[in-house]
Length: 343
Picture 1 (spheres, rainbow, N blue to C red):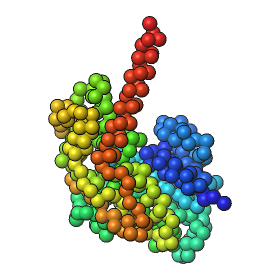
Picture 2 (cartoon, rainbow, N blue to C red):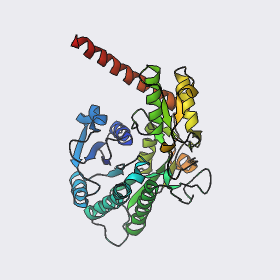
Picture 3 (cartoon, one colour):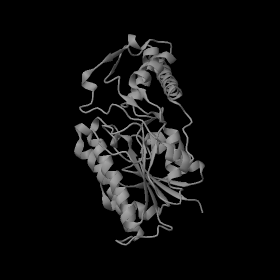
Picture 4 (tube, rainbow, N blue to C red):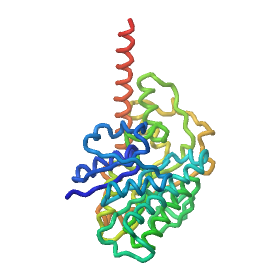
């Protein structure tokens, strides 16, 4: 019998890569969908014939219980979240409901469907749960690089909500013996990243400027430093975490730091342009409380999971620019066809 996996957030960047990875491993993959009109369902459209979907909402406890009971999964990957950090200052209550309380509701659904009570279980044969934690929990960092024992000092409502999700996952592991783990993933990008995220904003702008569709790119803090990796690599780590004999939390990242300025320079150089001719600073794009430096110490993942990233940061930025050049070129060709048809 093949394993069954249930993925929340299956239409997001990570969800789509994880679905591909699990299908390749022979899993039956289910996606939790909040209504069939999900605007990003196109991300997994090429996989639809191989996927199953179940209705559910991270803000609705009963729907999660019904979904878990229907699917009877071996593994649940909770990737569903509002992942754009700046939005958490604009809608902090909504972000907290989904990114924090949504984790609790999913854990409760597992507990109720599995029949777990206040006594610890031995964990045998039960649903295994993965929580998508975040490097944003480290916030105003106490040390660099950040590892599993680094204290959390979140600097955004998003980071605070993710910290709650992380700790409630650990609490259910310790209280009920649930196989529940958190992956503290550092920034991970891809051509599937939403256009609101800085790396994709850069790659899209570079492609459009190169093709003459755009003149300038406005950014906030060019000096912010991140540990950026490829999302396709990071979903492998999620899967590996749920295959271990004992549940545990892991930091996942490359251990290399790059600034937003580095990302801009690499992207513009890839198309033969000087970034300083096109980039301007917009103070309104600077966060109210900035996280200046994030860098992962992923030694535990390397030694215990055998996980290593396969794509470095310059290669990642070039991959994203190339993808957006292809997309922008297709849009231009389509526009030319429409114009020709109108004559």
